[in-house]
Length: 306
Image 1 (cartoon, one colour):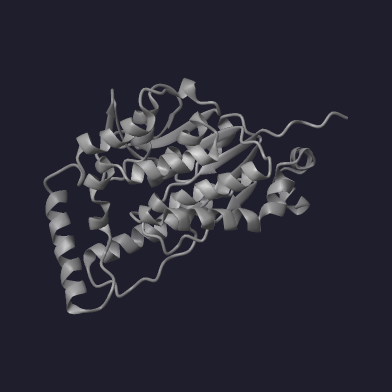
Image 2: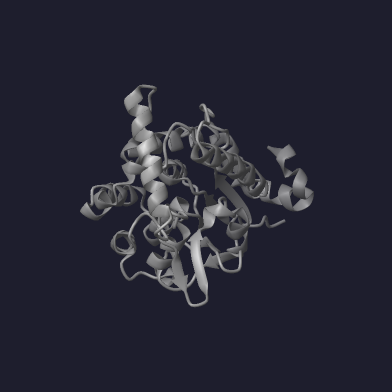
């Protein structure tokens, strides 16, 4: 009997700077000689996924990400202003209250806290004039259309605009208008694009989940803190639901990384490597032809084979 050929897809989740861990996971797959045949990404997962799909070389990917973090255009975004100040001193509390008030004022007068010009500049730098046709690995990303409430799959046209839409965190980055659509971060409703990876033609999907447990709740004294806590819990529950269809879920331990902590690149890459290494036996199992036969025969009971 001729065994079917595995077509391996990656479903890369959103999560801001935590998503640098995707690089570590991909690096381990490269080292083990495991081919990546399809990539679906959301938000930072779309950024990393599209960059790798264009040029499947982990060393070049690392170099490019470092360049981006050191860009003047990236520094101008000043993402650090969104990170709460830690500590219990009067100064820490005062600074946090000031930040909340200042940000709220901007939210009531703008459609985003960051400018369209500076945001577009970053994505133009990353992808230039490349389109989906230029990728060496079939790739697609997701975004949410605010007008219809539907998830939008992007797999044609300019990469920079599609990925920019997928990573447009509501209220932080400006939404992307495309004809009759107003697109924001796909992570709002489809943070782990497992189904999309299958739709691209994968018959085995490995998902990378960046957050699976709630952070410490803190004191929850302000309305903003309460809102952010509820958003976090909703996000985690949705991610668990979306990841259920994957053949394997890898969970890098990046819980302590804030979404703006891009200066923790090396730390996040190492956490991605560690998570992939921990599951290396299962990775090799689910990417085998034997596993694919078992999956076709037993369907949802495939996990019994691992």
